[in-house]
Image 1 (cartoon, rainbow over the protein chains, first blue to last red):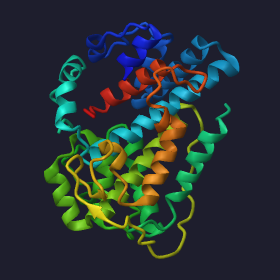
Image 2 (image 1 turned 30 degrees about the horizontal axis):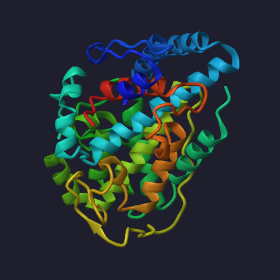
Image 3 (image 1 turned 180 degrees about the horizontal axis):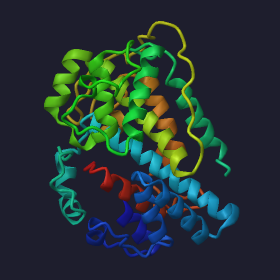
Image 4 (image 1 turned 180 degrees about the vertical axis):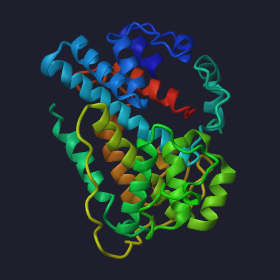
Length: 117
Length: 222
């Protein structure tokens, strides 16, 4: 989805770099969003505080920056939910979709995950 | 910090729902299981996937109303969802039942979403309310079948929608709560076809970058 919407918006997306854990895209605020997401999933509270403040500042500060951070936090929340939904219910793609996504999964380093069904 | 009203309301309603009777579980059992999910989520060093928390003293001091294996399942889904296998699913559901399992996955998802949002945004965590007394509602889809795209049973007809969308349809209340949250937290389901959709502060590629990073760190193939 990121490669599709990025292409439409004119943003470059390097899936191999994403697979290595780098932001890998020219999307605005990519570095700050990427680091904020990682900190939100981790357990280092000081890191999260720092990454949150950096995102708010980079997004314009004040109410504008705070609104961007809140929406980023909402996306984190959604994927903390959806990953457990998918893995908890044994969700998998239809065979034809899995085949279509093989190159993408490989680029993202996801081909060998236990959660691939 | 101001949270937009639709997001705040969806999360508040979902959180309050955790202590009400569900389709298969009482409000007291659901509250207990939510506490177990929180114990797993808030631990900087959760138990490894192969250790059932019920086998250790002090990890789950609050359990009494929900089955022990339900607590073990919730803990593992909360802490290590990327490690789950069909063999594990079969073992758990033999003891707790498939529909109760769907309910406990759904409530774990709600706990993960709301707790994560409030922590990420720098907001105080919400406490769980007192359990609402009453029997489970027993509300289940009219016809429940086993799909090809999920382990869990779903409402018929199966496999007409994506696996994640049909996952909780056997239990309409759990399905509705989850997708109301998803619509407020991410891209509403009906807007998925629009690559330029935005709520305002973030573009769709920006939202998807965050989504990709979280899924990657959670080792979720889907």
